[in-house]
Length: 300
Ligand code: RRO
Image (cartoon, rainbow, N blue to C red; front, side):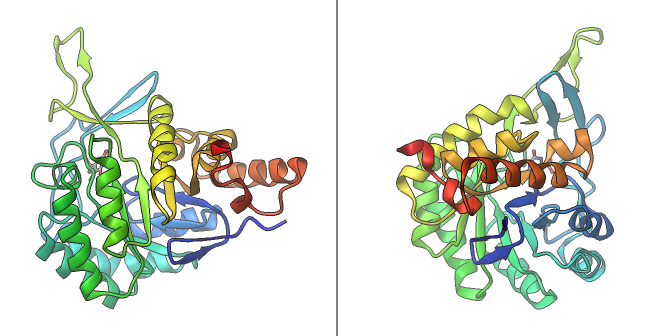
């Protein structure tokens, strides 16, 4: 039984990918690979270094987490010089996440990432609390088209586009497909808020943040299901996968691979072995020879 899948221009030893932003340092990405991840995605990078928002930037609640980290990163060039080589020592594909503010920035960073040895790019067009980046761009299919077209013109690397919940999700995804993206990642966190009833104030310094974890999963599964009906490029599911059953749910909805984020924060990196063992046993018991055989089965 092999768990290997071909998805979005990459061959992965299993369909479980460390989501962006969970682990930043290159040595931690290497460790995630050692723990069994099929691929790893870097923290989203910007052209200039960013400190991120002041604390509190992360709050846990019964449904998962709400974060407003604010894109902390040392800047694209510095990260690619110091962290990417370490991450690549893990010997699984390293997908570099880019969070530019316009197509020119995406182009510059895409060229830098390609030169530095990235295996694929993930364009983050979906952070729900980043001013003039993220979802502010991704919810406009015309802007999405412009960015993907520009990045497509400057690199032959596989392009994945991470989209978020918005009314135009399908149209933005179709724009990605038409402009030559190899995969769509759905979805990012949901714009949300937690209020501290003792302090009688919003908990996060940024007031609003992105909801991740189990509470997000049914929304993300629905988005993947709807995207699968319209797209011919692969969809990578993301949102609240805590165990192998959740991953299978995303695949049945139409995901060719699955990203894992909050579960790493809650259960640690052992989640990757747990997912592989659980999926392998399920495929064997149900008589499937590959994870690919599950993709979209809930649409029958
Ligand atoms: O850094 C963040 O605050 C962040 C990003 Br870039 C994102 O895409 N999604 C998220 O929940 N947080």
